[in-house]
Image (cartoon, rainbow, N blue to C red; front, side, top):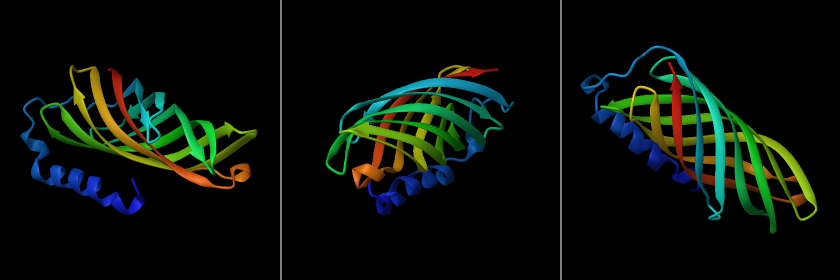
Length: 175
């Protein structure tokens, strides 16, 4: 997804937040702060498998932070096929929608590693994403999300490339 096309998913989430008032929830979530952990599996935009592990802290029903590791799978940067991975720290803004559903956005930074073709490059840059979450129980939730890692590569690859990940995650809340 090209950055200029990012307005479409953002507008969709904003529209949902406006159209579905948070006060209409029939099963209000527990607003108490808590830690959570989870794992995800998905595909990058080169149809390669990607997986990740993360932990987070939900300060209130609206704001949280996550720290995680993601294996980005294989991708092509500057004509070279590489394996990539990233450590990330992101802020998470949630909008409760209805019942046990919430929409969320992520924004933060990553420290990435790309290696292949005799090159090994490390870089840091911006990562951001959008998703939806459904809480099956008070402690368990399922997420579906899209996340972009901007400008992976550089150096010996002679190029940088954005990488998009579509993933499904399972979360356990420690409360």
